[in-house]
Image 1 (cartoon, rainbow, N blue to C red):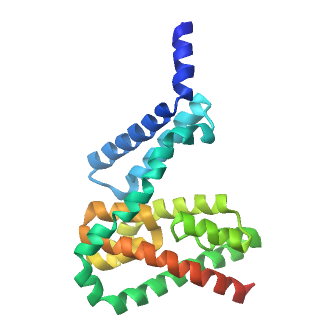
Image 2: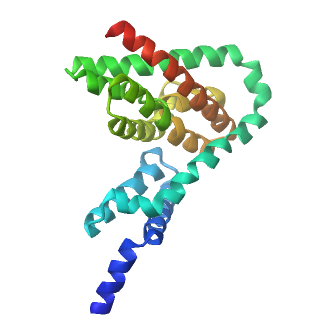
Length: 238
């Protein structure tokens, strides 16, 4: 019994354990997702997060200890983001031919995301700190956190809001687009990438390469637009 306990203590402290936990949790969530016919409500990222949090809570492991092992997956986010250029390159002729429409939709989407976030928080009586934290929530996490910090918000809260926005966009975005009759894959990709950045883009790539390419483009351009627009809007309003 003592040897089993000692082995568990060793495994729980090992970075390899937490890396394995991350990969197994995502594979399990992906299996459920596939078995359910790729139901967007069973998003693999959400399923993996819920499973990992539940296990860490049960075994009494804090986030810092977990991240020591999971940081290898975090490192791979950089190369994964760069690899989005491949489907974009394959769709470059279509992107170049729709430059004006892409620019207009990105500007509109970015403005709506920022103004609705600030407006909703203001109507609910949120503080300036909270409004600064939520304003850039539709940009990718590193950009959003930097913007929030510059405005006096809480980067850690912004990171949570970004992840929640991404998961909700990946879950309900396709359903909403179906309801309003948007069938063009490039338009669907732009909408998902603008609203739900990397998590939405990963979902778009699973469904259609054109949607994934336009979603990756929207994710990058929306990050730039948000970095430019949020400080301007914040200065005008506050």
